[in-house]
Length: 359
Image (cartoon, rainbow, N blue to C red):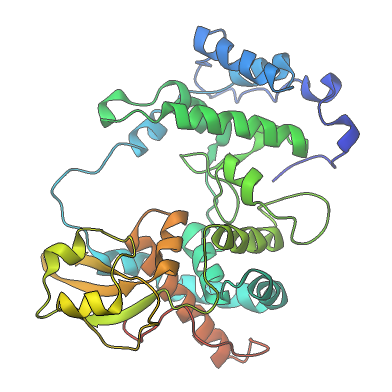
């Protein structure tokens, strides 16, 4: 992430914020957003927040409308069953696991500090960073200003929903973040949705949960230390419970699946209610907790099931998918197991990320 050294007294000086944006590539398509009424309205909103209007306007004049971004937010065809095993194989595979082991070895002290400060296990943090960006290898190829501007002002109506207001908000947070960190918005790249850095935070989440974990005076999510601390802080602020397993094994052969699956991944059932509905936990459950029965479809094959605790639900606040959360847990466990076997860990912490060997 390219930036200038911060100087708090000059964050909003016009001399900084009105700097001319970098020229577009000669091969780039014509700019799509200069002078549009809705863009001018957005510029006025940013000026009301204390940002330099000319800087925002000039930057948006260079933004490109990206059809690839619009296509990426289209929903999948209805009626298709998901495939957990296929999803798992994308992330829990030798190359990513080995990259995670090296990442853990290099940043073991920082990971342990985040674990101790926020209560989030090392395997969960490395699992998220591995699934999100392959430990920084794939942080996104789109200019963030292009992705967010496209989704703010040209969200595809044929998607069946309108999330343009959300992305307009994120575009504003992106400009505010660039002003604070004195970075050039046209130089920042991320995902098709505008997520950035090793942990793929949206701009609003950088403001809320980003952490200067190395103490250098700025938040840089391309910096592994800041990424580690920010992931742990995000989960802690969303309710992570220190020492509680995210998932537990369960037998559902005689269970009443319809009522058990109705709440989806929201922890709803006490151990006694699970027993009444025919779900048989295969490990001891903490008694004063609620659990969800999580279904993992396997295409045309039979589904797999686990019990998800509050911590599993917290993982889905990072990405609203039970498949994502399970991939994070299983990748993280594999990384930690390999690191322990290679004596990369200074100490072996209790397994609080899995709850069972097959989960």
